[in-house]
Image 1: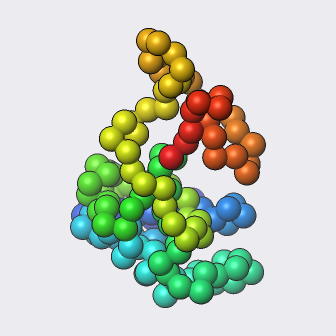
Image 2 (image 1 turned 60 degrees about the vertical axis):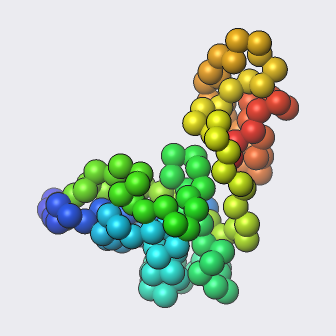
Length: 137
């Protein structure tokens, strides 16, 4: 088996759709999430032909480590390893949740000591966290 060589100044993104179909793209570290969405929209992979394509690129959203990326975020700002493959999800969503200052970790808001809570599996249509007081942004 051969391995694909990736230039050291390029970030390889493997994008996964909700259906599980994947495609790989290469971008410079200065590329923004909005630029990626536009590029993918304009270069929709042949392997995704059976997938419902958005009517405009602005509704394509990237999810990295469980968080929606806002359009102006660059790949460099995410501290991704250049020359390596990074996996992100690509979904259609009209609006993003507003970012919050305390968005670093999921915490129980009802616990007095604010201890971190381990991630719990969620139903596929859920946007809440492990209890009614928690949410995933």
